Image (cartoon, rainbow, N blue to C red; front, side, top):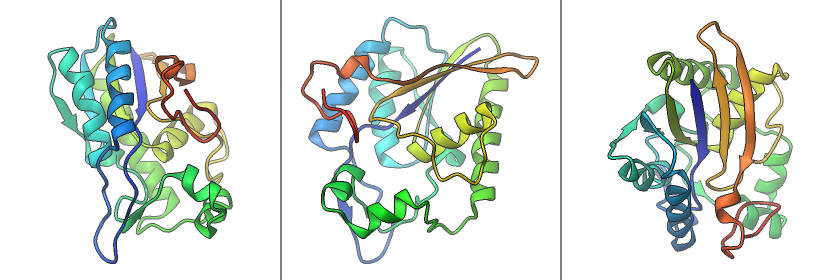
Length: 207
């Protein structure tokens, strides 16, 4: 089967005193999603799954609609910092040389669950979806940390590394999953649907 791990589109910046930030998509993010949905419209999808966070659900909805599907929320593909009171796009942190940017680069972990717990729940959740769709193709709309964690496991990388690459907004990461257990990465950071749009793509690229 073919697994499409897709990072959410660009959300708004939100910083709270208490409570989880859980921001919605920005205007640019909503435009990114339309390009993503158009791009995937020609492919057969047997299921569209999403993290419970708003930026992921809102990214998945137009994709699912193009295929006559509903978005199915999977709690265990939520990001590691899902309960954080703030969400600031990493591009803004880097541009301002914000201490939070340096913390991300250094792999500082600020979550109620340990890295081992996060890795365990993410891999188990994705593998359960793979098992449920033998011979099919599904999209899982999730987050940079989730994508890094699963692809690192496929590649056999050191699980203690904070993140070996940066997934762009609405980037597609394709994995072929055999029923015998083999996992092969087909693409990483597929963003051709944003080329020439003028929309932000991510940390290192613009449309």
